Image (cartoon, rainbow, N blue to C red; front, top):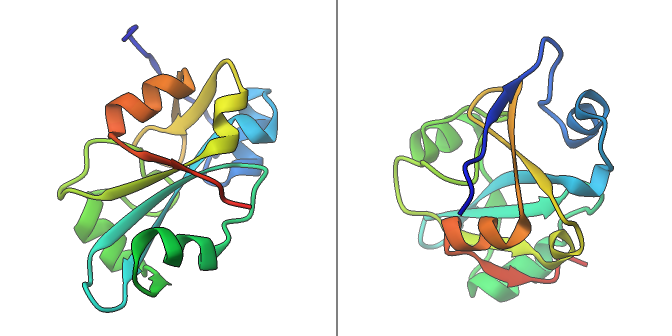
Length: 140
């Protein structure tokens, strides 16, 4: 894997739209990290979706095998060690089941959060799959 470099910006990269505008890339190149919580297991599920896609929660339920709910800010921070708006795809406090949007594979490079609302890093989609050990799935 090639070395990725974190870039910090004076403006926010908290949302996919803000990140794309700040970086100057396509919205689809933003790998947005969303944390869900298994309703029965209580386990975190990380969904890394293309910035252009809305996550289909029914599909996520199928992939996880249980109903899910959006995680609140405290659960996200406890599970990952990061606040909402800056959750990176790696480096979490606890193991996290990871589902990766297949649409991200259509880009040569993508951008992911790097731990705070103003920082991102660039990588190839295949690197994202490798470093997260995530499962490629369709979000739409």
